[in-house]
Amino acid sequence: MQLGLIGLGRMGAGIAERLRRDGHDVIGYDRNPEVSDVASLTELVARLAAPRAVWLMVPAGAATEATFEEVLGLLEPGDTIVDGGNSWYRDSIRRGEAAAARGLRFLDCGTSGGIWGLQNGFCLMVGGESEAFASLEPVFASLAPPEGYGHMGPVGAGHFVKMVHNGIEYGLMQAYAEGFALLEAYDAPIDLRAVSALWNHGSVVRSWLLELAERAFASDPALERLRGYVDDSGEGRWTVNEAVERAVPAHVLAAALFNRFDSRDDNSFAMRVLAALRNEFGGHAVRPA
Image (cartoon, rainbow, N blue to C red; front, side, top):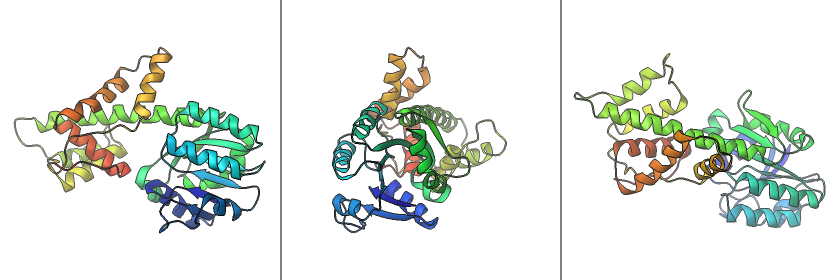
């Protein structure tokens, strides 16, 4: 298929490369001219054959809103916009309505996989009309590992599922961080890299996050090169807010979010574990010790 891709950062570049390797024609636009295939969004749209498909991979919030509005004015009825970023699902519902009013189709695609998506594939959670989803299914199939993509429901459902996914991610990471902090406090030295590797062989708590912990401990056993400052990109807050609005108990998810706030005032070992994991799976910036 032919696809216009807007945003060639860490994940966007991986998406473009994975699609090209599978035979798709990807035309990319980025504000950085050194990585962009075209000079403007107008040129991007002009190079796409109708019906066009344009995938947004830009930061959630103002950047996505501005890009969406510009693309909305350039596309024609029958074209499709995909938002693959971490947008708030209610914004996606609103954007879907704005697209429909102009005869355009809109898909909100929660995208998980971080900087490892190029190698391992991206997990895709897609919301929108069934016909729009089916029209781009070859793209989703190329991006995802086997059984790694799915249609979640109407517009908004994809980003809602991704929001909850990220909230759970917060909780899992917090549990690992606290556990390793307790191991680090033992009376005799314990090889945390070895524990990470051991637990991934038959243990109930085995996971990809543990594989990443093993990588982090292998390169910096005591995580001394990191400061235990852990940012939050917004999805954890949205998840907790939704739990409050819907009266759904979410003790672990809320505590994990609040612990990230705590991290900004100290340099605990648990927070250094969290920082290391975010850097390993997503390439997120860390603060040196």
